[in-house]
Image (tube, rainbow, N blue to C red):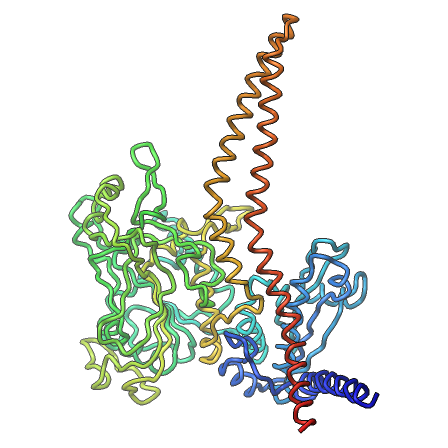
Amino acid sequence: MTKKLNSLLAVLVVAALFFGVNFVFGEAVSPKRIDLTEEGLYTLSEGTENILGSLQDDLKLRFYFSEGVAAEADGAQTARSYAQRVEELLERYASLSKGHITLEIKDPEPFSETEDEAVGYGLRGARVPGGRDKLYFGLAGTNSTDGEEVIAFFDPQRESFLEHDLTKLVYALDHPERPRVGVFSSLPIRAQPGNQMVQQSGRPAWMIVDQLQNSFDVEWVERGDTSLPSDIDILVLIHPQNFGDSLLYAIDQFVLGGGRLIVYYDPFCESDTDEINPQDQMSYISADRASDLGPLLEAWGVQMDPEQLAADRENAMQVGWQGEGIDYVAIFSIKPDGMDSTDPAVSELKEVIMHTAGVLEPTADATTTFTPLLQTSEDSMRIERVSIAMSPNPPALLDAFVPDGKPLTVAARIGGPTRSAYPDGPPELEEGETAPELVTAHKDGAPRISVLMVADADHLQDQMWVQIRNILGQRIASPVSDNANLLLAALDNFAGNDDLISLRSRGLSRRPFTKVEKLQEAAEAEFRQEKQELDARLDEIQARIDELQKEKQGAVSGMIVTPEQRQAIDDARAEQLETRKKLRNVQRQLDKDIDKLEVEVKAWNFALPALIALLALGVWAFRKAN
């Protein structure tokens, strides 16, 4: 009796220890966690920790999740699981903020004041399968000056960017001022007023300019400038050309000093018509239509051959040719499979259209990092600029197409350490130049730069990304591609500090059973042939039945139905039923091994904790006996 009592007490002690340790570590010391996930899902990036540790303003974060609605809806399991992760991450943010973040967890029940509050902040409710009411799952943040930032709905498809999105929201609340962006373009992107004296009509700005001015404070840089505006955070260069050494030096120092740079660097900018004479066909070849930044590209470890363009046969866009549509390999689209899905600048883009773009590559001796953002398909090659400079011939390009078998990079992010393109300091002034005021001392290098390059400037033209309608005197834009969103997303990313820029996508908490998926692929490959043969046989039988039915209908109209016809139809239907049975067996066989493996996985999930507990109990009993 005593031994039985001791055994029972031992089991109770182990169970108590098991639940007690879980409670203590889960509640009492929750900030101290061990992250055993493969991609460190629950370990915040150093950049996030730096931002949270340096907050100046007091922020309030309100996390809304319709717990009651989710509990009643059969299709809300994914959302509930994801909501738990979001809540845990927000609690972690609050604990690392040194008291600057107050977190409120709210359940917006249907028709409640909390639901009204969520809607007032701009949160979006969604219907879920099996649910009667809308499910709210978002975040509203405010700062001490009544500034607001909102995530209207946490999309599980964007889970890999959860930390980035939360940190970006927190950073925006702590830095509410609009980013200042310097912009230069040698192309006519700005509005041109008309001249009534010579009956000359004005020219509207490119739509990309409206997009920029809606979100940022824009300061224009002119070609003849010898310095950059001192208060800009980001510099955008669209087809830079013919810069003086003083302006090139200013750009060099801006980048080395921590400024962020976005360059649209085009080897053959068809929008640049300054040197084109329509009466002189040779001017189309001789005109200098390539972007040029002097020695800066080499200093950043990037190169682009101005005589070669990227061509993509698989993703070629159709153009009109002699009354018909034909693929033009020099104009192509890039879909998500050609984008770096881990980079916030391109992660949400669906399609970018490139127009006679160049090819970006790292130099052999580069000290910087070169990360491709946009790439062609493997069905691509380089074509010579002269082949399309005067009179493009899409059929001839297709006939001569020989793919390289590897993707070509048309947009890239450049980071890491580099040296100045002007190691000896400021260049000598050119004739007529005025010495710029040097605000800081010469920088001969930097441990990290932030440059994003796109090898195409033409794709910012209105016709490449937007349809414009004039309604009651207002220009209404309807985007047809993500060309503008690429620039806006890059600016949005660069608008943060270095810590925010460093954040990339993380792994997913919802991990697939890779072995199950591989087994399913193997099973499908094994039985696909048999399934196709049975499907084909079913089609043949159905065709035979249809034919016999027609014969039968003809016989009925003549009041004669032969036994042979009736038997043939019955035989065909019997064979049809037997074939369907075989097809069902094949389908069941497809799932058999997969179901078996899933049962084994679930069994191990349930059994492993019990085995560990029994092992611990055995060790304890052994030590007790000895």
